Each structure stands twice: as C-alpha cells, then as structure tokens.
Length: 279
Length: 203
Ligand SMILES: C[S@@+](CC[C@H](N)C(=O)[O-])C[C@H]1O[C@@H](n2cnc3c(N)ncnc32)[C@H](O)[C@@H]1O
Image 1: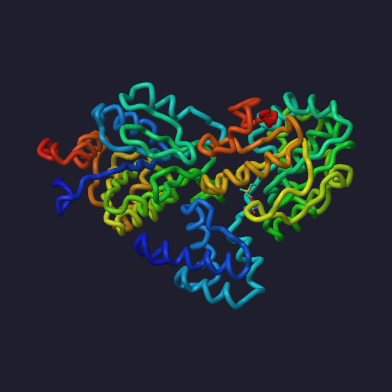
Image 2: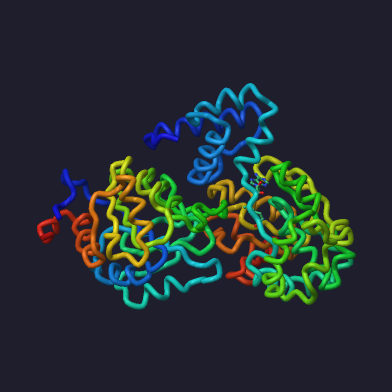
C-alpha cells in the first residue's frame, strides 16, 4: 500500500467504519485506531484493493463479504494457558470461592478460536468444579467461533502448550484431555459439553445472564477508553454479588470510570472482584 | 558527517529499535543522553515472551532518565524512556497515547519495530526521529521507510559496527536513512536534533 498522509488515511478509515456501522450494524468506531488501521490496510491488501477507500463499495454492496471483513478486523490470535501465572491465580485465588457455590456461571468474552476457554475448563475440571459449571464463550468473529466449537487443534500446538499448562499448576498431561489422531487433537466432550459458544458483540449487545466470573483478556486493548468503560459497565451488571473479573495482563483500566466498580484481588494478574453496591 | 539537510524542525519524539546485540548498544546510547533530554523515547527490542521486566532493569541500571514499561492508554511522556512490553505490539495513537495488541508477529517478532514506527510516523510526522540498531532480521526497514516518507529523521547504526548487520543494512538498502552512525555518535546527534540550540555542539 503506498504511503499516504495521516489525514487521507484517516478519512479512508472513517469511510470504511461508517459503511460497516450504517450498512451492517457493526460499529468499530470506538476501537483504538492504530491497530484498526493496520488491520483495515491488511484487509484491503488481501482483497486486492489498491487503497483502503476501495473497500467501501465492496463492503457496501457485497453482503457475502461481511464474514471475511469481520474476520479480518478481529484477528483471533490466542493460545492455551497464555500467561500461565494468571491461570494459576484463578486456580488458587478464585476457584476456592467458586467452590462454595451450588452452581457456577462463567462468561468468557472474546473467546476467539477457543484455546483460552478450553484452558479454563481444564483448570476447573482439575479443581473438581467443572461438573457444576456452565461456561458461555462469546465472540463477534463467526469463523473463529466455528473453529472454537470444533475444538480440534494440531497436535504440535498441544505439545507447545504443555509447558504453560504445567506452569499454570496443571496436574496431569495436557494431551490427556484430547483424543489424538492424524496429527490432530480433539478436545474431550466432557470438557466441551460444559461450554456454550455464541455470537455476542461487546459494542452493541447487552447482558444475557448472571455470572460469577467474567474472563475477558486481550479484547479491551483494542477499544478506546470510552468503549472500555461501556464494556466494564456491562461486566459490572452481569456479575453476581462479589463476582470476579479477569482481564488481560497488559490491560490498563485505570482511566475508565467504571473501573471504580472493581477492587483488585491480584492487580499484576488483573484479577478483580466486584464491589458491593454503595448504599 | 554533516547535520541533517535541510535544517530540521525540532524533534518531538524518538523511537529506537534493535534486536540481536542491541542491549549493549542501548547501554552506550541511553546513559549518554543529557538528563534534561526534552522529548519521549520509545524502545522496542526483540526479547523472548517470558522476559518480563528484564530489559527495563538492564537499561535502568545506568540511565539518568526514568525507564518504564509502556502501558496502554498512557500518554507518551517527555523525558521518559518507554520500553515496549514483551509479547505485545506497541503502537502510538494520534493523541500520543500508547496502544498494545496481540496481533500476529511481524517479521517473526512481537513487539515489532515496524509496527511501532509506522504508527509513530503517523502520530508525529516530521517530528519523529527513528533509530535502528543492530539486528539479525529485516524488521524495522518498512517502519524506517514510513518515517522517512512522513518527513521524520532516520538514524541507522553503521552495519560495520553492528553485532548483526542485517537490520541496519535492510534499512539502508531501502534508502530509509539520513545518517549512518557509530554507536558513540547517537547520543550527541539525538540531543542536538531534540534541542536545536545545541546544534552548534555538533562537530
Ligand atoms: C486477541 S483475541 C483474544 C483471545 C483470547 N481472549 C486470548 O486472550 O487469548 C481478541 C478477540 O476479541 C474478539 N472481539 C473483538 N471485538 C469484539 C467485540 N466487539 N465483541 C466481542 N468480541 C470481540 C475478536 O474477534 C478476537 O477473537
């Protein structure tokens, strides 16, 4: 893509975002611009457009293109047990509290291709909690959701994730949660059956049930402060009394007013607890 | 070597990128900067995903300027050395606050020098000075080209002095370079670029 002045680039990006919002109801205007710009440029390149502006008629007239556009704007990069100390923190600091509830509801927002939610379910299984747990895993990227629901990963990646699984306090072999064959590993149905995958847009959709824990990592980094604040408000209203929130390790919510609704359980791990309603 | 031609508007921000062998060069450049260095410095170094805090500690040990890990939504602040966190891309928004992302690696690197330089070139235009040091891959060349196109100043380590010459050589091959410097020259040149009244001190 040729280099263009900042202002031309910004106009082009605004046009694309406007079409997506007004024609298709997907509003990316509250996303942090720098990485959105990279992704839109990448999408234009992939679709053979010479400029970002050339995306406008494509997105405006070709409805069939929408899934690919959404997939391009929400690159679902993820891993199993990324930041293993966070999973260890959930195991040591949050699971013992959840264990006291008769039933546990968990919402994982921005599940991408499922690696993280399967990690969470494995952790809960080892804590003896999975059988009384229902996990809702949501994303706006339907291509990623379909992959997540399949639960099939290359065997090589499972080997790669094993080290982090053990660092997270895993007590077995990670491969024991998968059936292996033809270079692929399929997650056991005992793990998968506790998870419901669904399309949900954090920008525009509301709360759908009461949960005891929200896990939303490396999604808020893509949002500007205003949208971060909206989403934290959503988490506040979906959480039960003293419910827990887990954000990404580099997420910094100090600037959003809604952050005042949460108290840190373990600040470096970004584990928080919802504060009681002020009287 | 002469000062950048034509005389350049004062620099408002500095980005330094490096890879293999970069820490040693950073430790020559950063401590040699004056303690009243007037603009923000951002450092991207290719380090392993698990090496939390290691780079800052190593730089901080002998620096006069404060060294902090860059945090999303925080303002890029004059007089501070901001270091990119491991395993995230670092970017600058138009309002000069930081963003981070877990997007795929670029040139097999996250953080990538290209990613920061391209966003910083948009954010500061001709007010940016970019420094590309030793490294064993081609990350940074696209970024330097973006800085050059936006009117910024590009300083590249002399490949003959580099532990790994591929990175500076790639930028030079792209023509994305205003001055080629040996490690000891970066600090005085940066100080002069950021504080034009000191230009006279340049030999
Ligand atoms: C970088 S991935 C993070 C995946 C996982 N949570 C992790 O940390 O490994 C970000 C995910 O957020 C999703 N996402 C982006 N915008 C969203 C929105 N408005 N609502 C729901 N999910 C969104 C993307 O589709 C992508 O799958």
